[in-house]
Amino acid sequence: MESPEPTRIMVAVNESSLKGYPHPSISSRSAFIWTIEKIVQTNVTGFKLLFLHAQVPDEDCFDDMDSIYASPQDFNDMNEKDKIRGIHLLEYFVGRCHEIGISCEAWVKKGDPKEVICSEVKRIQPDLLVVGSRGLGPFQRVFVGTVSEFCVKHAECPVITIKRKVDDVPQDPVDD
Amino acid sequence: MESPEPTRIMVAVNESSLKGYPHPSISSRSAFIWTIEKIVQTNVTGFKLLFLHAQVPDEDCFDDMDSIYASPQDFNDMNEKDKIRGIHLLEYFVGRCHEIGISCEAWVKKGDPKEVICSEVKRIQPDLLVVGSRGLGPFQRVFVGTVSEFCVKHAECPVITIKRKVDDVPQDPVDD
Image 1 (cartoon, chains in turn blue, brown):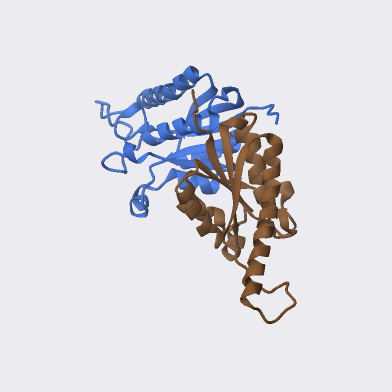
Image 2: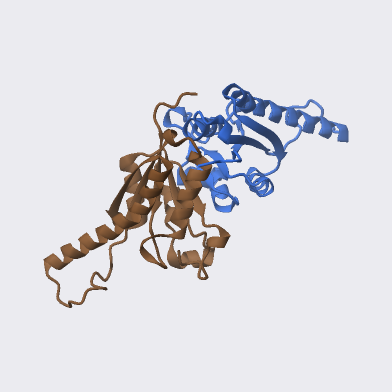
């Protein structure tokens, strides 16, 4: 069985809602580790990982700025700052791939995560999309929505959803 | 990265609705081929495939029997016949695995496919479940139901749904 091209796996990652940037969320880290342990294993040349960080635009852009007046330059600075935070998040995954010896690419894209992920799948056409999930119950889901369910339905490639391990679930399961 | 245990992938398979036994459905064959090409590749010792054929109990058990009266023995014979058909279906997949050199197990279980698959996942605890899907639109789905959607929601392991290739879709997409 020859495999001329490596299998391209897109992994959608986000920051921890508890610890913030540059820490990855528990569920993105779980999804990544699962992919390495269960799929890639020692066959590092057979796969390429594509890390997409969909960055939610800040509703209140000036959360952590002292100024109450904002020039266009302030907006630019803010965007730049967000971008850098996103890149720091991706460094975790790129660093781990480097240690393991598997090739990867990583990029940040602003927008609603579920829309961004599906449009990037369309553009990049990976063989597989891996998304982490908090594995919330139906009651919790109503309030927080789930990116993974949307992607399973709408992404134009096979999708696999990896739930956090029970041991990894924080006190409030909505946290990540 | 050491991987002491092979990754156990359960593949749910069924017969072709067009050609009947022992032919596998287009979507089960697609799911199997995808798993080999994109996941297993040349790493045949890293994986074990577990083929489950959930066999729908015949509503009209005596479809292809001449007798209009049935003894309990007739029922036994019928069940035996069904079982043999199921085993012939599995032979396709087991034979292909043998050629490729990947270890596998295969078994038949009677019942509603979506319930059978989820209860076997619970019992066997595979690392991953792969199910084929006809990729029907919402309108067609209402009438035929989809096993894959149920499994994505309810199976207690990561699930991946593989749609048929566009070239493989028969004239009536409900066929398989």
